[in-house]
Image 1 (cartoon, helix red, strand yellow):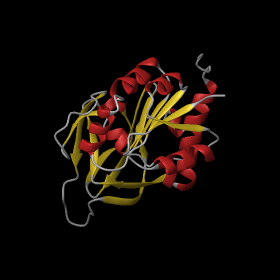
Image 2 (cartoon, helix red, strand yellow):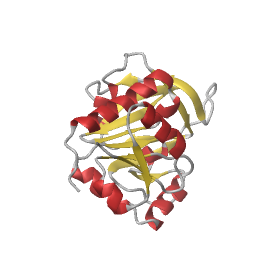
Image 3 (cartoon, rainbow, N blue to C red):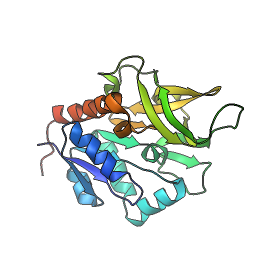
Image 4 (cartoon, helix red, strand yellow):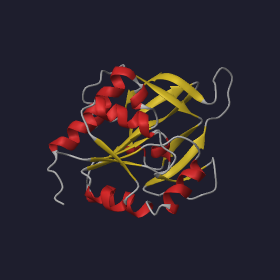
Length: 213
C-alpha cells in the first residue's frame, strides 16, 4: 500500500488535509520524522498562518533537508496554501529566507477599490498548464476556496499551472514542476473540485511503484 506523509510542523491544517486525503482514498500518516518522510511514497506539506513562524518551525524540527530530498527523489509532493509559499525564496510577509526550491517571491496583494484583503472565498481557476496531473478530472470552470493575503510570484512563469483574478490582479494559484505540485487554495475545503484534485494526486501516487523499505 502506498504511504503519504503529511508533514507536521505546528503550522498545518492537519485534520482537514488528512480528512480530504482519506476521502480521496488515501491513508495519510502525520509525521515530523525525517525517516518517515524518506520512506513515504509521497509527501504533503499543508500550512496555515504566517511565513516566518512556518519556516522557523520547519528548521527547528530539521525538516528543511528532508523536504528538499523528498522533492529531489522524484516522489509526488503536494504543497497546500502556506505549504506553497514557503517553497519560495522569500516573502514580503517576513524576513526569514524560504526554502528556495522554487525561485521567486511571495507578495502581498495590492490594495485597490472593490477588493478585499485577505482574499477569502471562492474563485475560478484558469489553467495555464492543463496537462498537470492535478487537473485531470476537473472542468475548465472549476471553483476552489481561498484564504490568503499573500500570493506567490515565481521567477519562471512556466511553473505556473493555474491562475486566478482578484480585482485587476491576476496571480498564480498553483504551480507544477515535474513531481512537485502546490496550490494556494484549500482543496480540502473546495467541495467536488477539491476532492477531484486530491483524488488525482492520490492516483498519481498509487500508480508509482511503492518505495522499498
